[in-house]
Length: 56
Image (cartoon, rainbow, N blue to C red; front, side):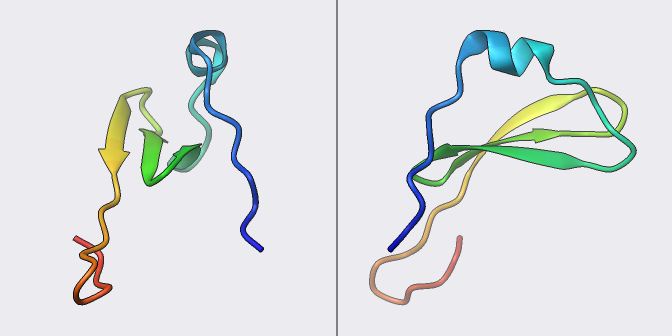
């Protein structure tokens, strides 16, 4: 059974500081927040094509 992921809240995103390596916070359903070493926060969406099951 898949692990249930709790959606991120605004305060949690603002409080997260960069670490020595890139880190990722997951928001569920393929949405993730990438936090780079130098502090940039970027939203990414991981899409899987239903027909081929390949990540786009």
